[in-house]
Each structure stands twice: as structure tokens, then as C-alpha cells.
Image (cartoon, rainbow, N blue to C red; front, side):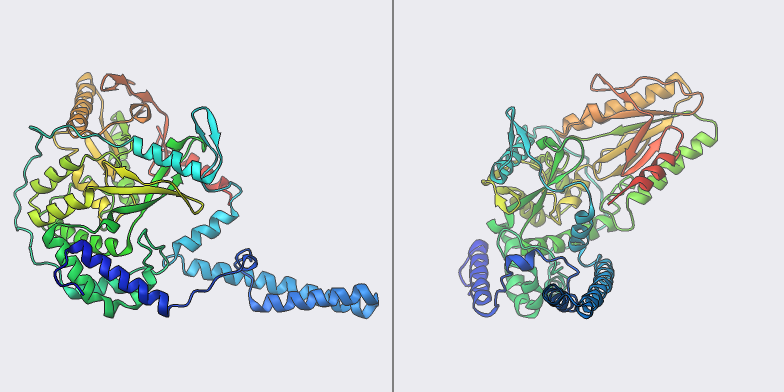
Length: 499
């Protein structure tokens, strides 16, 4: 099947044969429109009782007797009891499956919210766009507009690492592919190639060998099948005005097989990074045994200690503009090579980043395809690790306390003198130099300073010559923090939350 074929041809042959047998031996069940509109809790017992209730009601309407009315009352009461029980059982089932099927869980939660989810009518060229096709095209056009046009790398080069052990070259094994196939989440949606994750998991033993051959050939040749470079983008509303395209975040749905290999490669790179202590201790995002909680606890514990000792403290909250979408590819690759990753791996990643295309999906309607010029795909498996490695040297040369969760960055230091203020400003200047060097942009309007402590001088700061706004409260990784480190507003917000 694979003799004398390159990686792309091997993949297309594999996909053609798999799709042929899937269409031949896997029956399709088409749900009727009435079934689609049924509530999730509706089971056979409730359906049967509802039928008896309708029958009893018709009997009562035609006969009008007390006996017929009592029969109707009986079945009406039985229906209410059965529906209440079915709803409870449905919620318990959804909660029990939340870890394995979060999509179903959040779909149910969103159905209970008063606010309508999805893409609202969008403002475009002073008009409101309402059709799904037009909304998809407007969002795709906006997502494409933020890409970085990379400048020549020239003399830009990262610091090289001295590593204890070189990365292994023969790391991919067939049993790794089988293990990966058996851990695929069957509740996920298929990517643009249409291969369903359940098929891959159920046929893991049969598919491990051809996929191992494709993965091995792709890695050794540095060629990535074009299907793995395609993405269906789902726009996720962040915050602000729902009609503004800039308030939506793109999340990419890519090939399940492609993500399987990304996962194997990510684990290989992650092991190398951990063994050699390459990742900065400031980074808490997408790291094993680290999370939003560890970031918040470590940072604010340090701040509270300084306040308890009588220091005034200034915190700078920084915001990168479209961080994941604007990573320049050549600069990223220079950093990957600087940490000692093998040329085989770097070449594969380079090809994986090149010639990517995406289309936006709104209510099942697709936009046209557009080229992806920069960034690491949000929704990919490999992307978060690559982003972490790209900004890994962000805190080098910074004297203040730096804390990072993915692209969310904050720094603080005691400010008991003009010299302390000057030092913090110098750190901001250093970060501005880093951003310019690596073609990343700060959204200065969203960068804020918070002054803490009774004796705080309330000193002004600037980033690239633009004064930072002062804030008495910030939402840090989803938690409201005020200038007294109080949590009353956060508790109040949680208490007011309604689904």
C-alpha cells in the first residue's frame, strides 16, 4: 500500500482505504428533526407515561366522567414524578461524565444560561452582518488580519543553552502509537479530514502499523500531510461587545490523526525540556503539576509577605496582543534550535507551521479558506508547548518578581524609594525591548499598574512611552484582585452568578 510513496501519498492512501471501509461497514443513523428537538432527559418510561396521559385526557374530554378525570389526574401525577426523576438522573449522568465528555457538560450548562451563546450579529463596515456565511467570512478576515509579517531574522539570535543530555533521535515506537490510539477521546469532533476519533480508537490494533509508518516517514522526511495543516476554526466569545469581531478568540479543530502525532512529539520534547531544566520556573501555563492556582498562590503569597513586612508594592499587569496568533515562525524555530532540539524535529515543526490554512465555522456554515502566516494554532496539541518555549526567556535580566501563565504576565517589586520605582521602570523597558526583538506586541491599553500599601508613592510607569493606566482592581486568571488583596468582590461575583 505504501511502497514508493512519499508521506502525502501514504496519508492519502490510508485515508482513502479507511473511508472506503467505514462507508461500507459502519451504518449511519440519521436523527429525525423531532428527535433532535427532544430534551436530553426524555427517556422511554417518560414517553410511555406521556402517551397514557394523552390517551386519558382524550377519554375524559369525550366521556366527561369522574372516573375518566381521576384516571387523567393519576397519569398526570405519574408524569410529573417520572419527569422529575428523569431530569435528576440526566444531570447526575452528565456530571459523572464531565471529565470524559466536557462538551456535553458545557452544552447543558450553556442551555441553562439566560444569555444566548454563539456568534452575535457582527459590525462590519458600518453594517450589521447577520447571515452565518457572512459572519464566518468577517471573522476569518479579522483573524487573518492580526498575523505577523515577519521581518528578516538577521542578527536576532536567542541565547544558547548548555544541556546535560542531547535529545534522542530514535524515539518513536509502534507501541507509543497504539497507546495513543487507545487514549483518544471518542467524544471529540473529527477534524477537516473527517476521520472520527471513535474509528481510530476502536481500530487501534489494526491501524497502529500503517500510522506508525506514516509518522516515521513524516518525521524522517520533514513532510507533513496537508490535511494536518488544515483547521476548522470555532470563534469563542471572550468579553466586551458581542458585535465586535475582535472580541472573539479562534480555536482550531484539526485532524485527530495529526494531533495524535503532535502528542507523541510534544511528550518527546517535554521530556527533553524537563531533563535539562530548560523551562523557566516563572511559567505556570500548560505545565505538569502547575496551574492557574499555583500561579496565583505563589505570586500573591510573595506580595502579601512584602506588604506584611511594611513594604509598598507595585504590580504591573501586562497583556500581549493576540499572542498565540502572532508568534513569528522563523524566530520561534531559532529558539527551538537554541535549546538543542534535533534538526529532524525542528525541520518537522518548520514544515508543520508552513502553508497552514483555516476556515471559520459558524452554526455549521464555513467561510472560505485563508492562509495562516504566523502563530501557533490554538486548539493544537503541540502549540502550547511551542509558545511556552518561545517566551521562555521573557524574564531574563528582569530584577522584579515575574510570574507567567501562558501569555498572561505580571511583575511586582517593593517600591519604597525612587530607586525602586526606577528599577521597575527599567524592567518594563527591558520587556519592551524583548517584545520588539521578537516581534510581539503589548496591548498597552490593557496593561495596568496597581499600587498596594499605605505608603505607596503612586508612581507613574510607561511602556514604549505610553503611560500605564492605574487600577484598583484587576481580574487575574479569572480571579478579582483589589489593591488591598481582598476577596469580597470575587465572593460577591460568584454569589451573583446565575445559570
